Length: 328
Image (cartoon, rainbow, N blue to C red):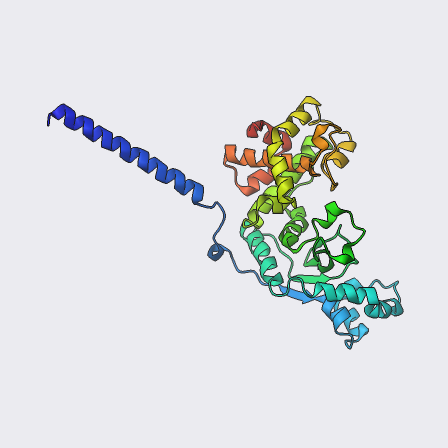
């Protein structure tokens, strides 16, 4: 074999090795997770208190004892007779009974998973030391509440979209009242600690604020699917993916990004059965598409800049818009 041919063969195999090595690196990059492994998460201790069980289930427990232990649940202006009547009310007891089949064995573990991730990313933050479950008469605007040292969970807002006790609630809200959205609500409750409020009333600032909140979801509950973070059904998520460029083009063409028109909040950011473009896009669209676009923009910013979570959360909206080069 000639020296020339021998060199050509060597170059060929060297090229193949380089290609193979590149493929290995690419696959490794695609399959490795940027999030910590379970064994890397610090332990976090908290007390889980099932207050609804103490109040509605253990009727032999004196009211005075409950008031002494949990004074923040008993406003001074409310007479004891009101609480006594509520404990035995038929509807309240039915609601209580329904909640006892939800989160039977995994409530503490699922809550702990969120808190451990929060403790990992924000080790200097003092997280709630007590997690308390209670009934709130299906107040779905307060499904989880961060009250400094307490984290409150309204267990009567996770009974499932078809539960008869939810009759009369709009379907787009009932879709969210399912156990799978526990982590999402816990993160939303905690997000006020980490996600700055919008710096101004511009639509872009509000979109990015919600986008950062959903980006925080990726880190505090990385095992969830994308649609579960924003509490979309799979079909709603698919619609958003399919029409992403159409939605963005609508925002840009109508010069909405820097608009301070308050109606934009109701059309694209707050819960609603669909987003309001006043065009063909309304058909089958999910609500809160402004939040979703903000999330996609924040994700693009992180991918282009390589910024860590803290940097992403602190970046201002215009920086994120510019450096993300978001243009689906």
